[in-house]
Length: 358
Image (cartoon, rainbow, N blue to C red):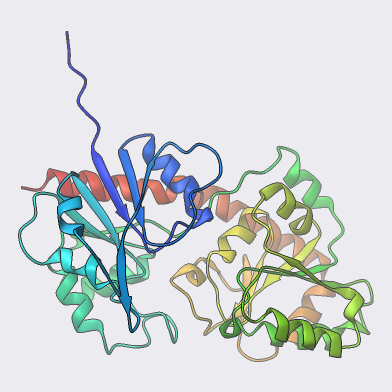
């Protein structure tokens, strides 16, 4: 009788349990004995196939330390930790002997002022990265950055940062033929995203294009300021605030009639979510990003602009054929290159490689 090899015990360390990450963890749990440990967040409603562990944490002045973390990690074959210098308890695992393999997962470079724009803490990142078994990065651009600083390519892996989407079988055919009249924003309402410039641009266009509406999906600290700005615009009845929506079936109703998804100041996972519904993404060429902006090919599946958003939107609204071309390319790009499988494959490669090392 052949004994079945026990599954690899995998621990993922995060700051919080985010709903959009649940499909990733579920996919990884199909192959590994997975535990996700985190500091804040609620357990997802309903049954999930991975274990969850809430970590007692000390936090002060923007940094965090977890009690007895090193002892916890010894119970696993592989530990994948978020790569964030604020979480010094996680980063400390890189130093000293350990019986498990340690992989750091994240952007890999600074993103606060633009991708890899701030280099003040690069020496610390490289010091820590040199002492772990692998780096699992959001983008190929970050991988190239580490190679340029002498890191061996075989230690560097890319798991393209993306989200899972479930679409009705009839969605694309219906969307392809649909009337497009919505300008859409989706994501947390943060001041750094410059959503106010989207409202200003809509106000400039609203008289000329009386069929166009602006729909803002999300919650966050900028909500009240944005609502005040909308009320002052004179087009309140054509600017809609929907709150946070996580259901793909509810999102589909909005994306179905959307011209484009726009986030002037930041290009994150909303890029991939929009593409998955066949909606092009518009953002500044200098938008803050963790690497997700690099999925946009200007004029192909989205638009990267410098200054005048209203001019970009006007040109697009006047050209329905262009909207449909961008839409088709965005849809094809996601479903060919950026499904959840593209991300989980990166995890599998990193885990397999590190376990194969002495």
